[in-house]
Image (cartoon, rainbow over the protein chains, first blue to last red):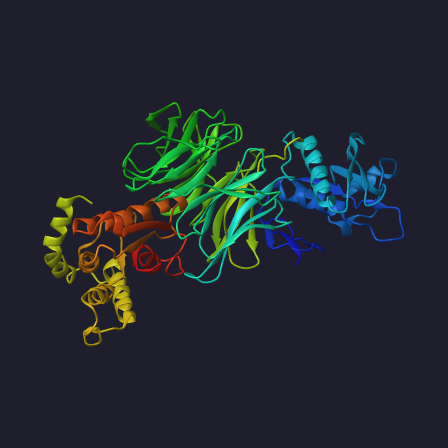
Length: 437
Length: 175
């Protein structure tokens, strides 16, 4: 399989390059890029040996920066020179190629299955060195190391922490209804390194990352009724945390990772939000309305929950203080359908599913001004999730009758689609930043 | 659903069915959904003749399945429409023959809107059918409900015809 990266902004020339990477099942298409993307040259890294280089670091770095929409990496075939260190760069050549920045580096063996990548970032216009660093990797971690290099370059040039080392979880559904196979998948943010977390002929839905990125909570109907499971990614160890009568749905981790907010309907069928303390299994009811109350998400400080409720007739977003669950207040007022809130990492905005003249779209609501901005343009867009740096949202949409994933920058300017080679993909959730970096 | 509403629906069902005939034929829920129920009835495939000689219990079950096993709903609604009340009645009749008889109600929604909200909507529909059965004497212990929301569509498609077939409660025995 190959990873194909296509930029199809009408104003820009169509440039496709194909990377020899195994197991890529998501095809990424940049549907709209930023017009003033910064031109940058990522020169192939040097490798001082007769044997072939173990990994193409520059290719992954260039693909990451391109996907951000903020950078336009120079096509390799336009490079007239391949410097691997700063003292080899002839800056006038790169100025002529209209690159604002250049990255050069080399990979050197450093013991058995150990490598060091040294890389430098220069401003082409004034020849100033902005970064000079080295990072280590094994063959297996070469891709992860390349994402780290992209993160470092991205942060240096934009002031925003890079999210290229993060992952996404999503659900795929294959086959024709009503007989489908549902699979929960975790992949790198670029769609590579896909791992199957769970698979069932009964629905799987609502994956949620624990704040430390080590566990996923999700809903599975494998026992012919909904239940919430928590699975540790590294070990595959799994526990069933809620299998009560009625709905067990919409799990959301508290910021401290100790409590899940969830939706239950219990025996009487009243759909309400609860919290479940994981250590003690203490269940606390958070909503008391006879309508549908669901899709909880926590405030950054863990004192509040935002959720969807149709208590006023159609779904809208409400908030409730977890210490005073009786009193919920309404948050959204624009339009007759706002649901599935997700808080931005800075805590200032909610991403929601918003009905906009008959279409379901992703919108962000500013919590202070209550102003709403619609970011997507599909018919059936849902499940928005913020990247941990807050710069991008991933969501599910439809493309020619198939479920695909899409990303959009929070200013709405950069859009891309990630389609699986077969079946539908849906319910993407972006992981937190890796711990300890 | 409240008792008064249900009684009203039962009383009005004859009138409403008559009124249906004058409805414009383009209304998807009036045209598509009952047709689908009819198809289900045919698939059950057994008639009164073959049912003779079966225990009364089994006869009531066959009659219930023939009456229909799927109840369709309007967009974002959970009220049982008059044309589906006979289905509820037929299943209640069977379930009332023996308190050991059990039924599973599977609530579903169409694909529009967010997934967990749709789980709530499917649950509300399953609960509407549960309450209608209980009002006809079926006990709580005989009924289990599950909501699949939009996760298990009956048919694929993103048009009103597909949506109308996916907004449903399926009445299931032995699952």
